Each structure stands twice: as structure tokens, then as C-alpha cells.
Length: 330
Image 1: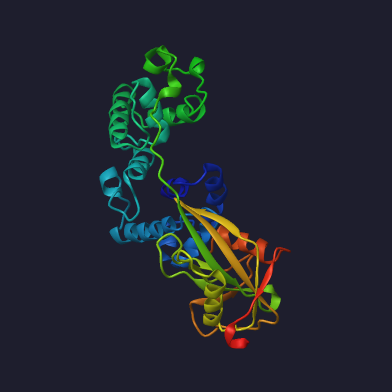
Image 2: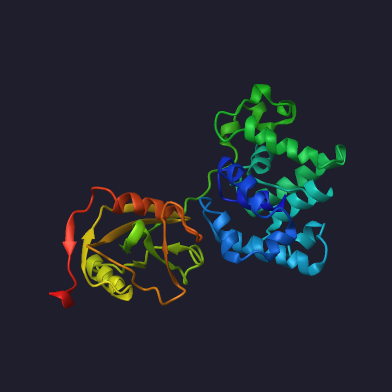
């Protein structure tokens, strides 16, 4: 239950459902998860994004093993690393018959419409209203399944757009349905401006078409993942010059070929990556440090990101446009 809830955070349910069976195959018990290497757990999250969740899930498993038994209440579960109020309430309710309502986006939306609340999703006020209303439902039907029913109602009937009010079992007590104004609730969220970043990256291929990756040590979103070396460019900074500096760190001083740009998004960041490909026989460089590794980009044995596949497509395709030389080689 904890694994499925963590996987579904900020990830499409279908993608989480596809990854879930393989994750349980690798880590069939809590003890197996707790004793695993952190990188192995992060690798099992490949393709789901937000890899910090994997590290926190691993830390939570270790914390439970250290306790000697599962915490069963929402308050106890919320003390585990990375377990927020909703996840704690959901695990407590559906695994241990807890009585604290788990309020997700679906429950919030249904609450806003039933009570005609002009409040945005995710707001503290709507979360409080959702808990109060869901708690009242539990008072009439004392089983956590009543909350699961509301979640399913929000996912299939009381949908964000074009809700099917005529098919809703709550239509007689729904204030929004009574005024045919369901689309007006909840209120729109305020949009957060997206941060735009420009990165330079270097792609070096060695024997067997393996690619030199570096473990990301800074930043919370990509930390611990393995990617071709990259640098966030300052405004006005020369991408080719930064790429040459990265290549020297890798032990490569030959030609670089600029490939086509790659687009990638991480939370509220829109990133454009400018990859530069080593031209010519690269050989094995930067093998003396544990922070570097030659990997098959199609099947890396280290935890990586979907960004690796995007870079592979750009750097191995016909999009190279210019040669960049290292001034020390001229």
C-alpha cells in the first residue's frame, strides 16, 4: 500500500501501475526493500520521475524495520520520511482501518461541488472542508470504503471537466448540481510561473556504444541519478565553451559536434539541453572515479532519468550541426 501510494504521487496512475509489479518482484518484502542499496531502489523508479520519492521510500522502509513493526495510525505513519498527511491517512485507512479521512484531489473536487465552495484545489481551506465532509460520511457508513467510493466517484463521474451529474448518486444533495454549475467548482488554481533553464551537456561514446555518465551530486530533483555530464548555463554564457570545460573534466580534448536541442521538464522548470557529442575515437576516459560510469543508454545498470533516452535520440540521430574545437588543441 505504501509503495503504490508513493509511486502514484505526481505520476500518472497508469505509469505507476506498470512499474508496481516489477518493483514488488525486486523487493517482495519490507525487509528486502530496507536492506537494498539506495541506487537499486532509485533504479526501480526509472521512468516515474521525482526520484527523491524513491530515496524517501527506502528511508521509510528502513525506519519501519528499525521500529520493529508497522506504525498503524495516520499520526505515526506521518512521522516516516517522505510520508505526508494524505499518504499517511490513506495507508492507515486502507491497510489498518484508520479513521482519518484521506483527502486527495478527487475528494476535494467532490466536496467543493457538493458544498458549492469557491476554493482552489490544494488549498488548506478545501482540504479541511474535505476532511470534515468525508468524516461525516464515515459517521453514516463506518468503513474506509466510503472514502474509496468518493475517490472513484471523482475519478469517473465527478470529473474535472464535463462531469456526469445525471449519473451521480450525490446529485440530490449537491449544491452545484442543483444550480447546474458544477464546472464552476472548485476555483481555478493560481498558476506558478515556469522557470526556464538552458543546459550544456557532453555525450561521449566508447567501445560497444556505451556512454560516459556522471552521478549527479547537487540538486534535490536529480541527485543520485546518472546522466551525461551537464551544466546549467548562466544568462549569456557560451554553451560551446561550457561544453569544452565539461569535456576536459571527462578527459576528452578532441572535437565536439553540436547536436539538436532536447526539451525536458522537471516540476516547474522548462529545460532546453544543448548536447555536444565527442567526434572521433573516444576510448575510455574518466574511469578512475566512482562518480563516473560507462553504461548502455538503452539499458543502464545505474538509476537514470527519461532524459537519458531523449539525449540518446538527439546525439545518435542526424541532427549534429557544427564542430566545436578545444582551443588548447588549436
